[in-house]
Amino acid sequence: MGNVGFRIKKDFERIDPIIVKQFRGIATSNIGDVMGRLWAMDHRIKPVNHPGIHLVGSAFTVRTHPSDNLLVHKAMDLAQPGDVIVIDAFGDMGNAILGEIMCHYAKTKGIAGYVVDGPVRDLDGIAKMGFPVFSKGGTPRGPYKEGPGEINTIISCGNVPVEPGDLIVGDGDGVIVVPKAEALEILEKAKAVERQESEIIQSIYNGQWDRKWVDDVLNKKGCEILD
Image (cartoon, rainbow, N blue to C red; front, top):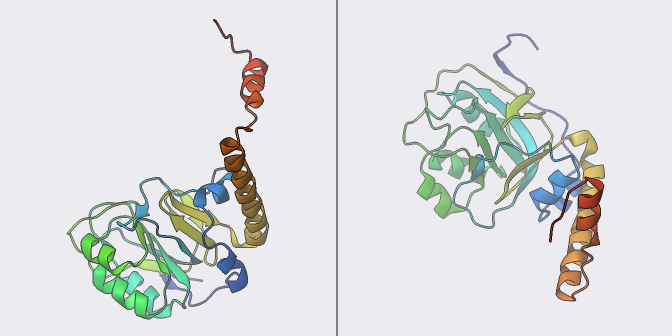
């Protein structure tokens, strides 16, 4: 691809929808734990007033100037149902990258949601419509529509690399990126963690949670415990 900084790639390889569907409901914390705790976006990227929201879909990436959303508008026209539009706005908080009207349009297109490394606006309206939007916050200051930018190149969002087609999972804790080549393996490991946590919770209420490991680690580390 030429014309670095102002270019669009229309399509890319997506994860099997059957695999994507199986990630629904799995907590980002469990997914992150099986990926070395390294693939979670910046903690400031949170859902816009959506308690209990859960976002899952293939990353449709956009890199845009921090004050501009021309390429985001084009992304909405190109994205397929189930895609998550992931926007690298360099984390700048000066101008909102999208608002309520763009969310309504994305919803009619079957787009799963937005993840924005930057602010959005119309927070109350977005919250009322229940459309999944994750961002670093809000501002009433709107964007320009001049460009430049890129669509479906590798970006950074919340300090995590995102390749087109990577799996995006978001919930109340934040957003996790699952590299598409490892999605099935990560899915199986995350499900195993879920089963293990369920067993631990049950053991807690049964009074059977083995706490011996705490002292074992402290002793191994040479911690001095005084009476």
